[in-house]
Length: 119
Image (cartoon, helix red, strand yellow):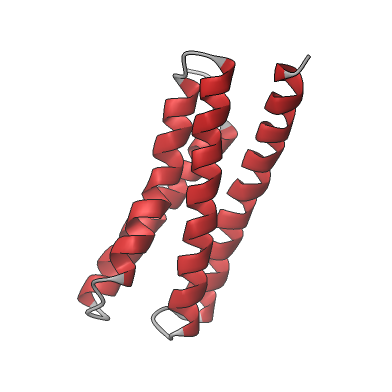
């Protein structure tokens, strides 16, 4: 099967988010914020998968837009977890960079897809 950069990066990000969730629950006994980051952090890749299987170009764009919004939300929760001392700077910086890279890729794909749709 052909490799897909954003799909692979989102999957790897989801794995890291699941591990963060497990850490927050067991080490920090944090149960509310951890569920928020788990939901949106894993949703990014799930919506990319749905976009790839989309039934039309508009469906593809719609699913990628959801993925982009979920990545934005993950970015928010990561900042909040860091600023409230649930995660240290090293973990935060690493996850934030991954999230921002996914956001940049999704943004470019969406821009290109919307341009191609209007042609």
